[in-house]
Structures are given as C-alpha cells and as structure tokens.
Length: 375
Image 1: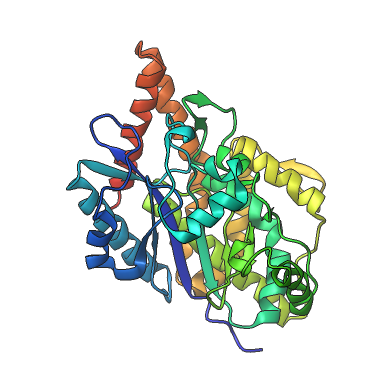
Image 2: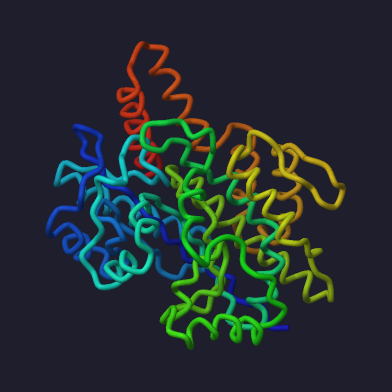
C-alpha cells in the first residue's frame, strides 16, 4: 500500500481587538489588502468583520509548519499594530456581545446570513483546522471513521473559550455550543465507504440545499478543496506551540491508523453515542477531568490519557519528525489549557478588587501576550 504524504496544512481564525479598549474592532478598510501584499491568498476575511483567517502553505513536516505559522501570525500582528489593533487567537472573546458585530460584505457571507438566520449571527467564534495530506478517497473515509474516536481528546487539549459575553460559562469550550447550532455539524456519520459518503452528501447537493461539501461542517471531513482529511473540532490556540502540538498529534494519529490498516488491523469502532459522551466531557471539562476509555469501561484522568497517546503514536511521531511536539501533550495535560489560564487571570483580577469588565480586559491582555509569546 502506497504511503500517503501526511503533509500538513493549518488554518486559524483570529479576532481583532483595539489595543486601548480591548474591545473587538472591525478590520479597517484596506487591512486585508495590506496583509495580502505580504501573504497573498494565505489571508482572507471571515464571516464577521472583526475576524481574519490565515492558512499555511502545504508543509512537509511540523518544522515547516512552525515557520509558516510564525510568519503568518507575525505578519498579521504587524499590520494590525499599524491600525492600533492586535490579533488574539481565541475561540470566544471574553467580553464581546455578538449582537454588536457585523458580517463581512461578501456574497458567501450574505448567503450564510440569509440561509442560517439568527444562528449565523451568533457565530462570534474562531477555530483551528488541521489538514493532513491523504490523496486516496477510500482511505480518507476509512481513516475518518477511526479518527473520530480521538476527536474528544483533541478538543479537550485545545479548549480556549470559557467566557461568553463577560460570563463564565462553566465550560472549557463554549465555542462548540455555539457552533453546534448550525446544521451539518458535530461528529460525522459512520460511512463505510467513499461511495456511501458520495451518495449521502449527493442527496442534499442534488436538491440544491448546499452547492458543495464546503457547507458540511463536521468535526472531521474530507476536504472539499484539497486531497486532505480536515480535522475541525479544535478551539484555536493562543500559543503557537500549542497549535503545533495539536497539529503534530493529529498527523501522528492518522499515520498510526494507516499503519494498522497496512497490517490488516484497525482501531475498534464505537458508536456516535459513546464518542459524543466523551465529546461533551471534553467540552465541559477540558483536561481537568478524564475521558471514558471504552475498552476498559472506566474514566481515565487526562495525564494518563496523554501518556498513552504519546506511547501510541511515538513510532509515527519519530517518522514524521514531530516527537518533541507530540510529547508536549503531557505538558498540556499537566498544566491545563488556555481556558485554565484565562480563568486564573480572571480570578487574580477579581481578587485584586477589579469588576467584571476589568477582569475580562485583563484576560484580553493575557491573550494578546500569548499570541506574541513564540513569535
């Protein structure tokens, strides 16, 4: 069996904030065009005018992805600073109200706003998508079925959205709650073949309900545009190195599953009901409580899960030259995610006597610092 490329591509969405008020700010006229003088089509507007999206080039390994992502983040930050703005890589702004935002003036976004109504207008959220190069259609569907088991693990380690409109939601990833209001989201169906996938999505395409599969927003999907499997469940990571760790783990897991297939083996399949329970636990608790290990039928704490993940993909991470990045999942499991750190900042501000708005502005200050941390 030919080995897939397992190349990497990373897409991230950022929010723009005013450096004085820490409030969300719409991209000023000419901002995207000025960014494109350096980044060409690697930068684009997003659904809301306060958002910007970037995408790396195809990267052969995590080292190339690091250089790409650092260059993209640095360039966006530099252009934003000229307008008194700063980007933050966070899935929900701690204080902003979605009702105060405007969507971008593009046909695609006008159509989304028309088709989805009030659900679309609440989409004040940002995510991270990791593409892994797998150019065989049948293999993409087979690996998508097996990879679904690990989606809650990836979500848990990426959580960066504990606050919504100034309130602590009690969740580690509130973004998921907002996004799940859209149609065609969540865990993918358990397709047994590429043909079944094509027949199924073809029904709603042929009826004109969607123009193509880019309007299917499952947690993992075959990319509409590229020969990749696109993992979409993760919150966007404020820290560059956390984003790279999660990308490297995604890449290594897919190579591990491919390796099982070459030996006529596979990861055991579990129903969507059970995987969805772990997905909820990841959304609610992040890495602060464990996930269900369905094989032993017990809840396993995250430090142990992280250690098991590292050992599971260690050989593949070595082959992909990303073992150091994959091993950092132990650090995330031990020290917590961005949501953990954001709450710690808010708690410290509250203990210092600051009111709610001041607490949330302190969190934004922290997120600006985290964005620039590894640049």
